[in-house]
Length: 282
Length: 119
Image 1 (cartoon, rainbow over the protein chains, first blue to last red):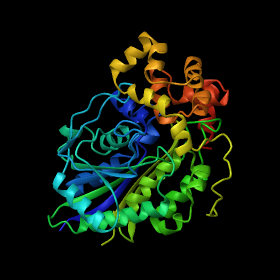
Image 2 (image 1 turned 90 degrees about the vertical axis):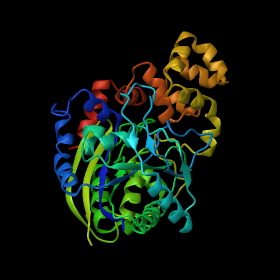
Image 3 (image 1 turned 135 degrees about the vertical axis):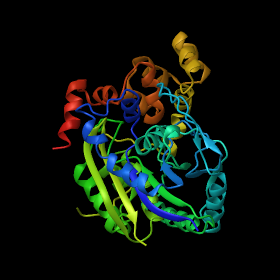
Image 4 (image 1 turned 90 degrees about the horizontal axis):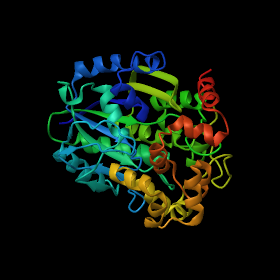
């Protein structure tokens, strides 16, 4: 049977992709951010997950306001990134796992989650930057897993509640664990933490709130479901709603997790950047 | 930190909730910006911005906000920041440039504000 071995969180800021392309990882600005990743890569090299479920939020590449799914699951054999308007480098295709995708879709709809299945889905920086951070070299990296993108709407309100995000993750975890093949799965929750790009409040970052979220996501994610969406915008900033991806990831991991590694750094671009490795407890 | 429920209708200063009302108001503007994912669309826009505005049926408020390259005006006209980022990209404006413009700071001051958030 499939096994979920752990969860990873990371910011997915486009500027990170640019810094990787320009090999600026050791620059003084970037070093405190990039230094968080080698210990996680060591864990990945040791455990070699077969599949990465990459939970992110599309930022206007795969979806537009004409048709905006609240929860979308990739069901393709491979995924490609596309130009998002400012010329991120074109990356090689990311191999998918369509069989597992459809198993997850079947399981989640059976569990009464109404999701959108995508046989084609252009993946943006929200998906690609975490893959680059955790598996440098991508296709050239021998440990590069197959990937399944899951996107949640944080572009327009109403966005999902934190409770719904956590419950989504629980159903996702249940679906994965019922998959008959003996594979190891890691779940990524990407985005965040606090940031606001728009309005007179642009540049808002809330260190205290971010650190509370990083603590509670380990010990008591249920407590976080008490935060309303309005309160999340107030405390985390308009784009800090990406924390929903972390809640989805956390739900899939089960009740108990061991935090093996974490880092918090301000600022990367306009954002408080949180990185975590959570190992599932059997 | 105390976690509490919060009134959904209380405005948050300096923040626009991009909800259904704004999504309808800004649809044409956001659709134009969404087209800028394609390099040829960016070139077509730069060759003749006014014709491009008309192609996507922008209203006068949206056109003027775009002419002014003013992000707050574009948001007021229904723009969503994720799509506006693609408009800004055409003019090589990054998120710090946009942040500085919206907060009335220099880019240097805005970057210092971000750094101070880590203190």
